Each structure stands twice: as C-alpha cells, then as structure tokens.
Image 1 (cartoon, rainbow, N blue to C red):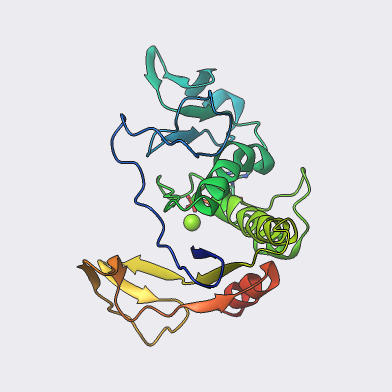
Image 2: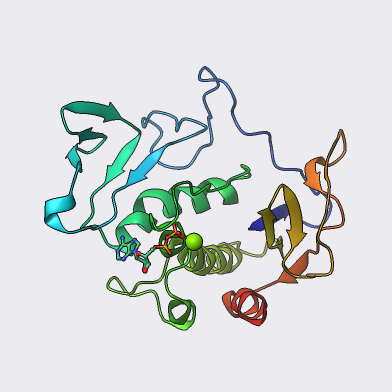
Length: 225
Ligand SMILES: Nc1ncnc2c1ncn2[C@@H]1O[C@H](COP(=O)(O)OP(=O)(O)O)[C@@H](O)[C@H]1O
Ligand SMILES: [Mg+2]
C-alpha cells in the first residue's frame, strides 16, 4: 500500500485532510464533475467469479444488485463474472487514485473465502506484475494502481508550470496471520503492534517503509519478497 504525502511548493507541507466521515460533508474541490454527487466514504463492490454455468447460484441482476436464488442484495456496484481486470480497475482503481492524489486516505480491502478470487483481483498471476496493463491482461488492480499513480504524478509535475510540486511515496507490505502482524519487507519482524496517537493517527509501529519513485521501484520490492 502506498502512502502519498504531497506538498505544493517547498515552504509548506500539508497533511492530507481527514476523509469525509459523514454524508453531509460535501467536498468543494473534489475530483470529478462539480455536479456529481460526492462519493460515499466506504463503497462495497461485489465481484462474482466465473464458475461452471450449472453452478452459478449468484447472478448479477443490475449494476448494483445481485440475486442468490430468489433473494436480492444491493451493494454500491456488482461486477459480473465476465468482467475483465481492466473493468475492475476502471470502477474501483481510477477513482481511488484520483482521491488519493486529492489528499484523501484510500484503501482497498478484499474479502472472501479461499478460492473466491481475492489474490487474482488484487494482483493477478505473478507474471502479470511485469506485463504492460493492456485491457486483456490479467494484471490485477494493485499493479494498475501503481502505474496510474506514478503516471499521474508525472503529469502533475509536467503541468505545474514552474511551480514546484513534490510527491513522496513510501511502500510498506504487511501480512496479518494468526492475529499477528508480520512485516513482509523485513520478515524478521513478526509481531508488530498497531498504535494510535494524535501525531500519526493509526499506524503499525516499526513497519518498514521504502521510498519509491516509479512503478519499477514497487515491482522490484514486491518481486524480491
Ligand atoms: N475473475 C476471475 N477470472 C479468472 N480466474 C479467476 C478469477 N477469480 C479467481 N480466479 C482463479 O481462481 C483461483 C482462485 O483465486 P484466488 O485469487 O487465488 O483466490 P483467493 O486469493 O481468494 O483464495 C485462481 O486460480 C485464480 O486465478
Ligand atoms: Mg489468495
């Protein structure tokens, strides 16, 4: 997961604003059209993974509704089993990167039983990490996000017209297993603690953070581990 700290000009380093936690907070400078409704702070998107046609119990019935036999359930969005990785990225990844670059904390939590497609959705097969993110590629949402993040940063820097814009990206990688937090960038650290204080907010103490400036930096770190 990347953390982005952005400073406009050398003098001032502004911390990202807190994410909007209440519905009635409406952003004035948010991404997207001025007339578009504000994004809810948490969105739940269901992806239905492909199975044999005969086993298909869960069916998409509209853009935000699925059915399980005769019961219907509504979410923010439903992604059908024939959707491509690129479709998931467009729906979930693109707005996330835009919000992150606008200063909001952003994260993706992937939840589901073993074999339901979490790893496929987040990463894709290992070979896809080093592929170009073509529409047909199996590359997951993570690598696509990293690519977009660094290309957007580059665009902002090119369009800054003399004003100096600095971005700082740091990369951490952790696993929670048997209630213990392990540092995947420093596997000796196997039982890290979650801390919460006024200065840092919520964070994992002593978690390794490596500075990254390009997509290749990120893939190097992840492939190495
Ligand atoms: N949408 C999908 N399209 C094609 N194959 C998929 C899809 N979702 C999952 N799979 C495949 O199903 C298997 C299990 O998925 P995986 O991501 O490993 O599950 P999880 O991480 O939730 O345990 C893998 O072989 C994966 O490639
Ligand atoms: Mg998995």
